[in-house]
Image (cartoon, rainbow, N blue to C red; front, side):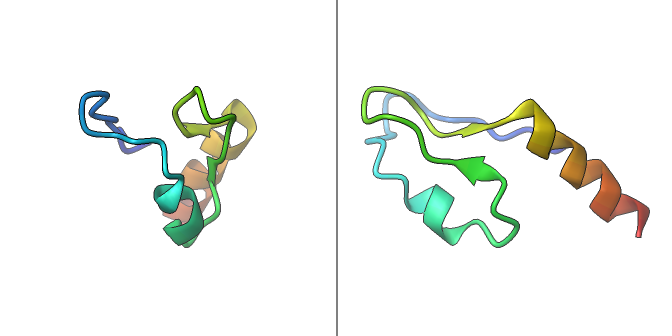
Length: 51
């Protein structure tokens, strides 16, 4: 799985990455946390690479 690095100093938690993610794997969370990729959706990346 590619590493997604969040720069905590620059991220304003706008969730734009969640809205623009074509695969829909980045999930929005509450305003006080950073966007995440859930363990269930991490497997999607492995499935896509197998195609």
